[in-house]
Image (cartoon, rainbow, N blue to C red; front, side, top):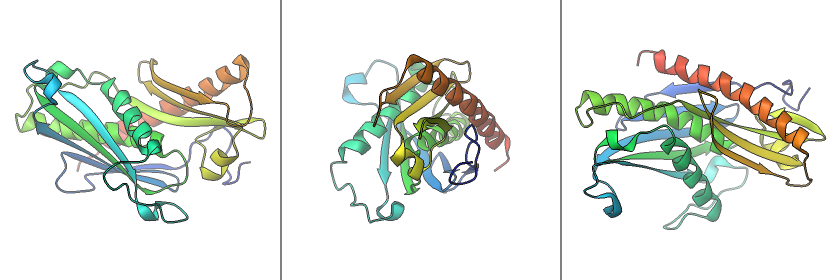
Length: 238
């Protein structure tokens, strides 16, 4: 049994509250246990200058942790985000661009904003998983409002963390487990089984091919559960 009573291969309790804010095209409050991230998606006319006139759109992401999201107050990113935030928002953008056909967006930009309200490990994977649902709602609204003429979403994606703690492979690490992990890995996978991103790091130890494959199998099983949770959330009337 783990610190919070879960099995090694068990996700935390996952919830997704859609339409959490009024003005965004799509908004989701996603919870992975005690980690809570507000994900919003907005489609705006126009693209970055380097894409102007090419007849295709763009997707970009921003990520931030609110000051009270951690045990001690986190300083706000004023002007320039810190290195960790830049890394994570680039990750979110890369992963979600993997399920968007840009030419179907037209010359529009899809903004994903992921703000961590409360952090207890796995904020980047929770952000990716929730952002996909917010993105789906924003696309549906933009199609209805005729801002775009075709659905640009070509796949479904979710992400999860896995790691080795005290020699044991664990799924969906909370903060206490993550801070003690010898090996940490984040995986983003599409519903067809293809991967968008694999981030594996030996934080305090090396790891063998066998351990890597075991972590990957654990992540795949968790992500397949997340895909089901996403679809269930999107089926609910709002």
